[in-house]
Length: 360
Ligand SMILES: CC(C)(COP(=O)([O-])OP(=O)([O-])OC[C@H]1O[C@@H](n2cnc3c(N)ncnc32)[C@H](O)[C@@H]1OP(=O)([O-])[O-])[C@@H](O)C(=O)NCCC(=O)NCCSC(=O)C[C@@](C)(O)CC(=O)[O-]
Image (cartoon, rainbow, N blue to C red; front, side):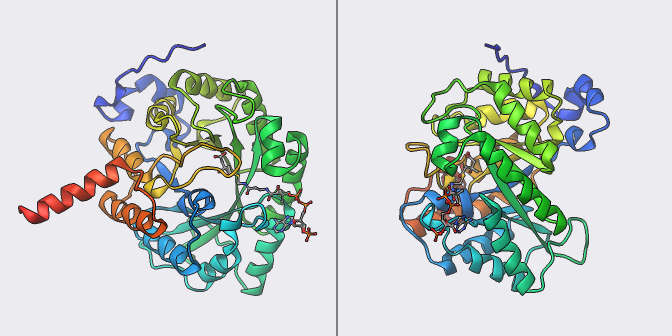
């Protein structure tokens, strides 16, 4: 196993702190920059596992609030059968609404929808066609929003069977027609590799080389980026580093990677720092630490967006996200769901604001 030695690089900005790494990645401007893109997965990965169902109106209000925080990518729902994930049943209506009346935002936002198979994407495309919508394109000022999809595969056979009722090889075959149709419609594709650092059925020792193979396959098939997911939160700093090294050794560029940490064992932020030091600049998180995974019992939510933003800002990184606003949303959605707010930073930020108001 690799030994992880923190290098305390974040006392000064990343570019000056890591001249060798900066030279190494000289052609990949995104990696040398101190900007991190956060993919907010709360309305999908978060809500899909909450016990209390919330109304379509509340989901739309959540998305609308998130759209005003500076986020640029928001997972809005998933086109899965309701019998598999009942909480995602209103995704068609969400897509329709976001096409017709996207929330006001100062920046362009990509709304992302999970599709488990070609039927999921066909259902999405049918709605877009019926509304006369195109996927839009990032960077084109004509569009204030774009539509993206995510597809997923798992790194273990047991999880693949439980989550998608098929083997890993079959799940990868499902990806081909999805990518083909998405490309035809100019829809950006995000891939996920689940259980990359631990499986609820097969345990923590998932082979990094297996994760790297699946990630490489998704990229070769046409995925624009792949989010490597610690679905169970079993990941540790040394194993995260080992995995990142295996991904690099397989020729996968950091610019094609995102990291997606659940915080079951409280290791998500530590593992985030490992990812940052390795050069990854896209991280997934969920406001208020919502969620979990319906096929990973006991796993808690994603790392809270508020906690991630605070950590990144404290390291001198930029996210463009308004932490105070995000903290208000985390508290609001937790109340709507009748659950505790799982963001320590969110609670501390709101307490500070209240304190400052009472003693200016
Ligand atoms: C892949 C399937 C559909 C196979 O499920 P299956 O039962 O094997 O599907 P099937 O092809 O045999 O079809 C069964 C029925 O479902 C219908 N059907 C088929 N597809 C769809 C669809 N897209 N939308 C709506 N309906 C659909 C289909 O038409 C048929 O209807 P019937 O003839 O019985 O009336 C199922 O296993 C599934 O939906 N799995 C997804 C479960 C899921 O969403 N899990 C959570 C997301 S993954 C995750 O959270 C992890 C992630 C990404 O966040 C990262 C991480 O942390 O790891």
